[in-house]
Length: 282
View (cartoon, rainbow, N blue to C red):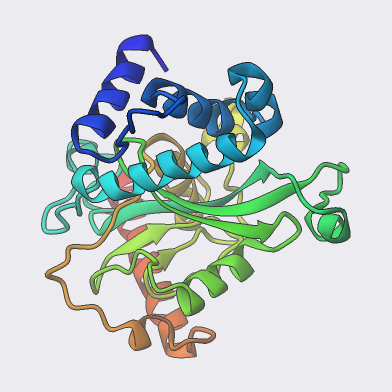
């Protein structure tokens, strides 16, 4: 973070009265924000900040949560729902993706983030390489901004299991309007609101380099476009508040039904066949 950006953040929080300062306070707003950024952005522990800023551990912990609460209070002012009525310009202006992915509104995936875990729980968070991490479910938008983050699951948990819990237990999941979907990888089920690639067909971008670029089947072409789209033009957004959401039909608080899986399979097949027909005219 640059100095102008840092001071702009401090000014934004203080001017809104989110970080009030008492006359006898020994910790300035600049220090508060700085120790918060060092913790979340530089993997500094509270004890590291205690030595750096020369304040007690209790003070560091309290000031950290004060800044965290202030940022959460300012979030609704900065994070606004997108417009689902029109495709994003990065989709509409790219003939490789439009009109095939015109209803795509985000890319979702799980990512491993290093974690500090109590010794009694470390076996659940330990990866095959021995490191400790949590599996964080994230969604990203066309502007490369994270719009949804679901944390807390151990690194050994499967992505599909984390999503299952997020949509069935967590009320703030980014539900979508009917007909829209997120791009997901093969670790997730291909069903309503989640468009996954074909399994058993090459998918990752390095597999198309060199002489292997030629497409053999419509599924091959679809997977390449899906991989490029989710890597280069990642998207992740919140639904419009005016759009009615039927959570029960979205997930049923359980596993997707066969009809939902079949409906999304039909959508995927139609996209693949349309792409193949457009690029291989008879």
